[in-house]
Length: 367
Image (cartoon, rainbow, N blue to C red; front, side, top):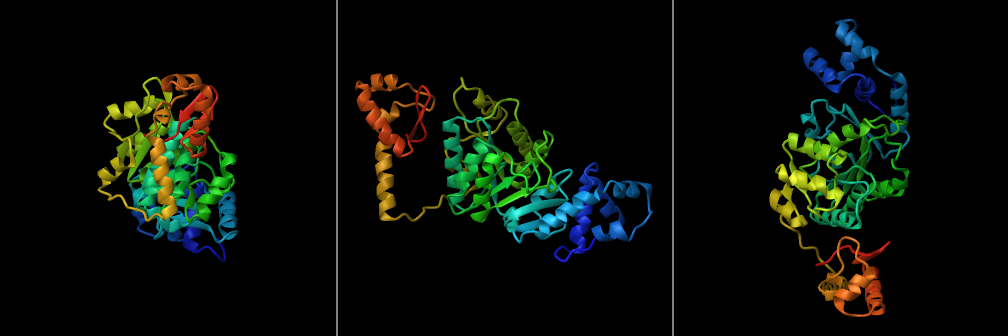
């Protein structure tokens, strides 16, 4: 257990965490029972009980070696163990909290106020826009946005979190060196470069396994003051996260949607169970008594904002739904030719208000 960059205590916690067939609460109970440090438990108490011997026998030296090599390979790599000053108290309320977190980026971010935004991987354009705008609003007032780096709602939430004054944390269901899905590697790098963090309780080299993601979800739920659900099926990992948050006494928020959309069924079910219905980020601010922060905007930005708001009230834009709307339907609603509709929709698309999709257009934002 020798390393130039890792303390003996850090390595002791790594050894305990490597025993992945052992629930972390068993190690914590042993530490409490013997009233000693992690290092003393492993080195100074030989053969004190069969139970402790069994725990030690489950340690995986190979995983420990990989973790040490990973931690020493880059100054942005950090080990945040249970007894560390960086370890968030919020995680200690879990029955079996992670003994070690592998962190890329800023470990102090783990103790900052956070709100989770989670949802479907196969999200609609409207859902992704909602997640990104909620994240932008939270980040603008200094709230860290936490999610799971999945495609769909998670990715949109992270991108929104990158734009404000706050930061974003990605909790992974793989080792810290395995970005999953691989298409989000660029996003992961952006999160770290912007002062955020990527965290995992899984050891370097460990890939995605089905049982990893419920474990990841419990960390997301525990870290955050509240969890916002944007699009989710009834049977989904997203609802697992929301239920975990509720069990921990955290706030759960749900964004409503069309009753004909399968991906809003989970949100509507949560609302029926007592989750707070939210349609704008101020609804979340109200729950946490956060004062929306007026950001200082330059003249050009204010002018652009005014133009966008003017467009957002346009009758033609109002005739585009958040679900797919055919071009001829838009033309009919406005009593104009398809050619004129196409010209207006192109302008709206360039401003990010609508998106062209197979079968027509969908509204991304606006009134």
